[in-house]
Amino acid sequence: MAYNKPLPVPQGESDVYWQKAKQGELWLRNCKSCGNAYFYPRDISPCCFSRDTDWIQASGKATLFTYGIVQRAPHPGFVDDVPFVTAVVELEEGPKMATNIVIEDPTPENLQIGMALEVVFEDITDELALPKFKPV
Amino acid sequence: MTDLRKTVAIVGVDESDEIGKVPDKSNLTHHAEAAYNALEDAGMSMKDVNGLFTAGTSTLNLAEYLGIEPSFTDTTAVGGSSFIIHIAHAMAAINAGYCDVALVTHGEAGRSRRSRPGGDAADPGSQFETPYGFLGAPINYAMAARRYMHVYGEDKTRQAMAEIAVATRKWAQLNPKAYMKDDMSFDDYHNSRWISWPFHLFDCCLVTDAGGAYVITSAERARDAKKKPVWVLGAAESHDHNMISQMPDLTRTVAKNTGPLALERSGVTHDDIDLAMIYDSFTYTVLATLESLGFCEPGEGPDFVANQRTAPGGDFAMNTSGGGLSYTHSGMYGMFLVLEAVRQLRGECGDRQLDDPKLCLINGTGGSLSSTGTTVLAVD
Image (cartoon, rainbow over all chains, first blue to last red):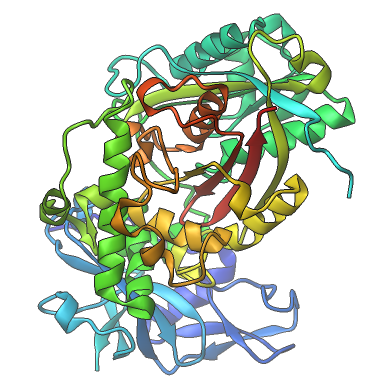
């Protein structure tokens, strides 16, 4: 069945993020002024409001910061997915990002806050892949 | 800082003609009906209005529909808290002399709307949250509640959420305008279906069709109003994120700043407050907000609301309308906090009327626990 969930529309300052994701890599913007990586990508850093920024490749390692187990599909594209896990993960580099946890049996028992995760990429269109996380 | 206490007052409030399930009325119909009714409550007419405030639609859209040319216009839209924040903005505008009769309206056919939802693809949320199914408040707020459970304990958090749901329903049973008035036991709460774990259905607000409006004016004009003025003592506003994944601390809202600042500007303390109107989009919103406002310490919310303390007859009066959980919640609920606060302070609440309340604290939350506005209202 065709993919019918909402699709991200890359913007100028996030093109690199999405191109790298399609290649199976997670890249972050990094503020050279304070040395901290940040999420989501934007040209001027939110930590120092500095223009002195670049891109770094993330390790793909993260921990589970919080989650919910969605029982009622919020959109027709998710009907076949329920129950599914929405989550905020804390990347090894520090920033937090929204994602899904890829897990067979999504129960509170199987989802421990702080558990180790690693990034995986789900191809959703010919151009786009979505970074998700699975338990290590 | 300039002392603005009692320089403006709310002099008219009301809902739209019918609230709850109202097929065939648009958002703007609810706005206009509520505006009409609130102006009547104030003993004023649309001709008196020169300041216009709303959220959810532009004042451009609203003013044309209402047929007015405001000399002060404000579409501050930061979610359901906007209508609390509009009080502060009206206070500033009236004190600056930019307008003297401000009309603030809300209308939302949350249940029966004929429109299609859809966000701006260029917004960060459209790229970094919605593709993952971060769609709608129950999903976003549930993740914040899960974090609170991790920090302070799942069982006591669950009990607190149940206490809030059950107590709020008891207030709704005393409000003729409330949408949900069936008895709710603790078992009913725990047995209600899952929406997004850890949220049961009864952790979540209603989805109704409703409008509301209030009229706020200078002290001078307020003295000529039909009913006794409900004074604005002080207010504060802030926001610290938009997307839930970017919230600095999922257990604390910016009420941690707006609450103490609004109280300081009002010259009162927590102990002086007779009624707390707290935005209850979800049971968890109330728990996090009570702590953030400083009514209790972080993690003490479950003890604070224990044993039905916020129910009718309890010693902490809160959400006496039945709240967003059981009275009405059209989508941006903040307006309805103001209506109840004013009615309680005027003594118009019938079976649910508190014993001569003098001071009410209102706190609205908007977005994904993103924005808060706190205001203190008083009567002489």
